[in-house]
Length: 267
Image (cartoon, rainbow, N blue to C red; front, side, top):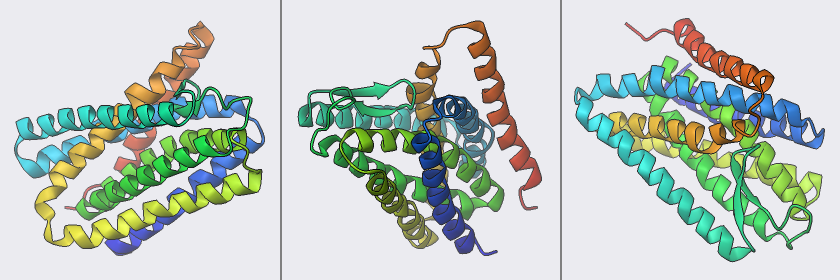
């Protein structure tokens, strides 16, 4: 397969499968599955960031200090962007904050009462932009090599499923039907494909941006795992839940390592 084919396939199938799987989990109210998937997603994100994206960025740039600064800048940037989204949501409805179960923004006033679709629409706008950025990161990774693209796609899909599950709950609580929630999420996932295609054509003549994009991808994965997902795990401090969480995080890291071994770097 060509690089462009890999980008199209990963962006299209990744977005669609994550939405369908999230719908299966959410619409069948299997909350325990979502909890387990969050732990796995944390491992996949951290594994992809530290075992693939960041080492590749360092190798391409030959400037470790610059790449470390880019990761630091990226984490701060994502923090500011998230603050802006939270600020915007708290002015649209009563107030919104992170749901510790899903690691996504949830309207606390809309859990039991419909809000004429306002919070659901805001979530869809934010998720569409998020998916667009994911497409850019997938394309940048595949344009370096197939192995990096595959493990990056796995990590992105892994964390998209619990996020999309959270989106379904928000849309349903906001007054949308199950069919509308599914269609809106599928439509939003197309932004991943658009972002991937645009990045492929734009980055052809801007290869010098690859290391920085990979460093930003690593920053995004680290931030989502550490800021949005891990805090929710601390809501279950009992030993049994902790052992399960650690085991699933290790499974997520191992799957990324195995994917990297199965699809080695080209020589």
